[in-house]
Length: 69
Image (cartoon, rainbow, N blue to C red; front, side, top):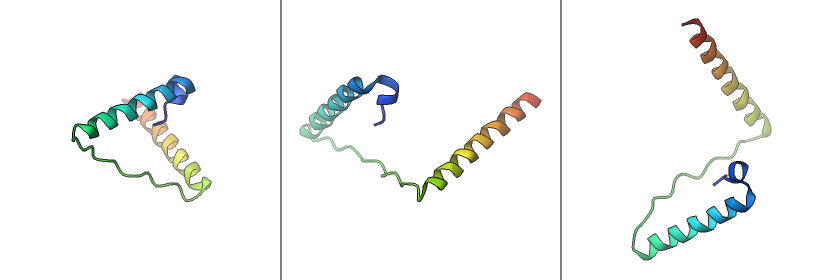
């Protein structure tokens, strides 16, 4: 969980600890949570830059379309 950018580092540590307690409590009650897929890392920094450029281009295109409507 990437909270520190939004809540600050100490609060994100508290949130992580709370999350771990909740998960352990659920396990002790016999509840099974489905784990999501593990994120695939980018092959290289160039791949992440290309993805960012694509996203920025898509958002810019959507803004132009909205402005023309």
